[in-house]
Image (cartoon, rainbow, N blue to C red; front, side, top):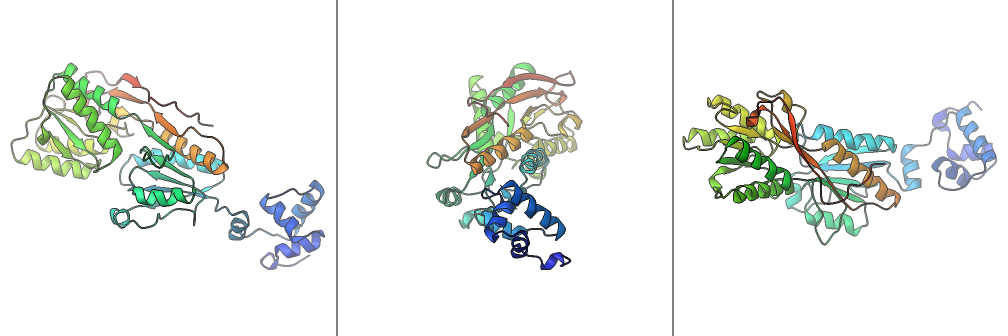
Length: 358
């Protein structure tokens, strides 16, 4: 038995073992019963002949790609690192590869097929609005496993999802700026248009102002896109006009807050003495900023783990909790005007039962 491994086929293994090709295939792919004696014989021959099943052939035989997908809108800021860590941890635990695709606005607008789907993955995670509803419909109609991240399901599709509490957390941090620091004109930085997290945070902002009897000044609502470069540019433009009358900024997310802090510093505006600043997410850089950033802590890595586990449960046909809303926590630091280094204001549970991560 001195044949080169490159010339060894499953037919050779079957012939030497004295069994059928189908039996060897069942053993390799774990697709059916094989007696312990035959399994041991096949395994020993594979070692002696240095035979490794061709990955593509194995995938075709099992009808599995051994890969799951993740579709994102971008990966330009620090938010995505913990999310990817959580997803990759569960993917690796299950012996799968993770394929990542970026969905552009043009791709969504022309209703192109999803870049990741039944043709190249066993299931796909879809972040926020990285696919249009029409694209989601196509995937769901094919009974393909899909889990949404930071986006609830369209009512008619009933897609499982994992997200975080947004509205109540934003209301509470705006309440804090008003009640504890006397802020009256609070500028709000929106995220991307039609993005659910942004819409819910804006709703919390509006609810807080209304509850305190403050009128909504639409001129204080700017689109920062959850990106520091965009937030910096739009705030600089507002400051350059000389009519910027605000005493606090809720930046929408921590990445935008970085741009806000830079723009205010360049304009000679002191934080928090002149303007309080708060963000959302509690990214790894938030406590290291100058001043340290008050923010809403979202369990981003846990979101990734929960979504990935939900997807693997779907792939296996196991029961799942369709809606997972993870709690957020307000973290107070010096940027809002709190003199202490860091503290937690409150923990905000979601209204839906949290799915156990197993």
